[in-house]
Amino acid sequence: MFMYILSEFFETFKFCFQTFEKQGLRRARSKEMRNPPPEHVATGARCRQHTTLVESGTVKMANIYGAFYLLPDPQREGNPKREASGGEMEMATGGEAAPEEGERRDWADLTPVCLAEAFSRLEPEDLWRGAMACCRSWREAARSRPALFAALDLEPAFEAIGADAAEWWTPAFQRRVDAMLRSAASLAAGGLREARVRHCSDDALAFAAKSSPQLSILSIRSSPGVTDRSMLTVASCCPILTELDISYCYEVSYKSLEAIGQSCPNLTVLKRSIFNWLDSSEHAQTVPAEYLRACPQDGDREAMVISRSMPKLKQLVLRFAKLSGVGLNSITEGCKELEVLDLFGCANLTSRGIEQAAANLKNLETLVKPNLYIPRSAFHMERYGHWQLYDERFQTNVFQI
Image 1 (cartoon, helix red, strand yellow):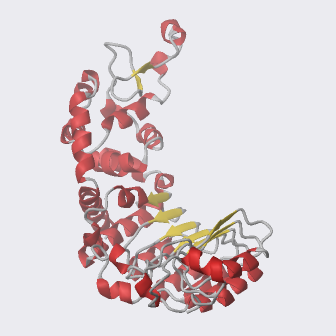
Image 2 (cartoon, rainbow, N blue to C red):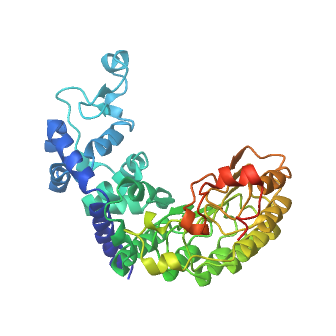
Image 3 (cartoon, rainbow, N blue to C red):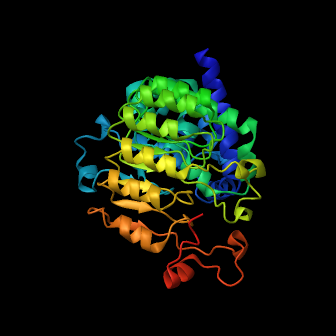
């Protein structure tokens, strides 16, 4: 069963990065062609997959080989010439350490301990797409050190390219993300501390939570398949959670927030933003229309739950949340330690109400007001369309809807 999950994971990771980095792969391939790895590296490796990966442009093998040269080498100790020159030389493919000209190292004979030590110096992308996918011996060496998989961060890939964002909302993509999350939790052997994914499901999140009692950072933004069921599992299985991002998760309600607050007393960062409901055209090309229409309406209830159960919050992000002055006052009265409060797009608030509520926060360093242009059609107004201009001039409650 485990080998099936592992094989599914490799296929998943390959698919996702093909989706995310079509342009990036071309650039990487071009760069490798301009700066090929040193000849002694390509010929010294017994495993032909090493060279194949470089030629295909799917992994930055120079980073992997550079990590090897950071390891101690008994053959180089006591060499006056090398010590005088400062140790390692620079590789031509990115500034990594390289051996002297003519020196060779047999990569295939490195022990699993040395391999794992080298892999610990790699970026996550190089670890997953390079070392783990290269050959069986490298994969087994990586698996022998669960600490290598303590963090799963897919956010850079999601943020890099948004051209295929519509595909992220398909069931097929969700299944692949689920396989990645399950595999990461399994490989970490209970040591997963950070998970940043999108578009995962209830079952995958519950599996990761049950397998990861040390989880402290969880980001599952834009996960329509996540509901209160899995969030209650997170609350009961991950008591040391300090950071939670459930933005754009419309099936997660105030019940989950209450459970998290009661079970995770050290929570300091909460992000609970929703899509721009004032102008849905911003997301019309990527987010399904029915999902945009399912925007949560209980902003004040969530605010009251946050104020009661999360007193240690230092950062709270509620972009476009539908909370009123009542909910905001509740937050500022219950979360006295807030240092960052982001209310961008919260059009139901007035500037006067925000200033009065912020006066309760003595540690507040950053306050993001809902300073945005609101289309006139949103409030059926003919003359005024700017939140700050209208509200600050006339101090009305027209935006308290």
